[in-house]
Structure formats: C-alpha cells, structure tokens
Length: 160
Image (cartoon, rainbow, N blue to C red; front, side, top):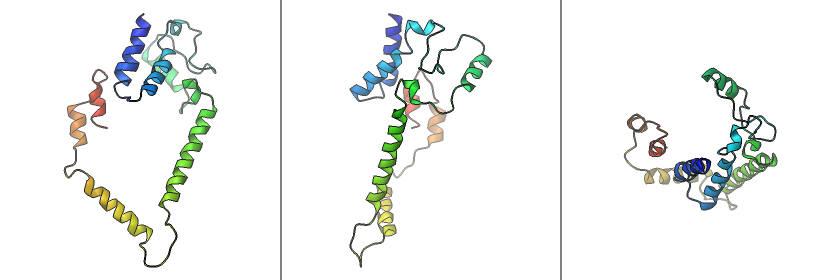
C-alpha cells in the first residue's frame, strides 16, 4: 500500500540510512507505523492516549502555527507511546552516568609525590588536542555550500 511505501521511504531510506543498528531501525519502522496509517485521516485518531497529539485538520499556516503553539514545550514519553516512567528511567540513568563519570575522575588513594587532579586533567586535555586534525573545518562554509535540504540527507550530516 501507499502507507507501507511511505513508512519504508521515511524509516528505512531517510532515517535508516543514518541508523546502523538493526533493532533501532525496526523501532523506527514501528514508531512511524502509528503516523503512516490510513487511520490518520480519521479526525478522531489520536497519536497519544491523552489526545494532545493528533493530526490537525488542513488549514492555513496560521492554523498550523496555533496548533503547534498549543503543544507542550517538552514532549513527554506518551508521544512515542512509552509509559510515563520512561522519562523517569532516562533521567535516573543519566544521573547515574554523570555520577559514575565524576567518581571516575576522582583521584585514587595514595598520597605524596603524585600529580594533582588539575595536572592530570591538563595532560589528558593536551593529549586529546594533539590528536585533533591540524586544519580546522570551516563549518560556516560547509553550511553555505551544502545547506540543509531534506531531499539530500548528506547536507544534514556534513555540518554535524
């Protein structure tokens, strides 16, 4: 069907070209199947349980802007049909990662004669700097020469 073709084109060709994990691609296909479906034409079809997210009626640009302004500033997990705890879990995991990193940066026991944390960090930073390319990329020139074009995904990738 045309819906399956649209889903394939967007999920596999557009996004799938940048997603290397097979399970992530399957997830994208599944998520987009909620949007690329004949049900989207039904005015009562909602994209979330709360009904906040839905396909607005055709109208003017001003109508679309008003609809967008009415959406939450920060999307909640329900827009992806995830449980509300998904956000909480993500925040807890992010906090744990930050704490693990901070603990890993702390000096490890011992005293006397060792380098200070500042000296260690400076050495690591200097080492990283030696591994960077000598010639810097002119990002502004790249953006000018290859402007964002949704028909050409490489133009989106190059400035990144």
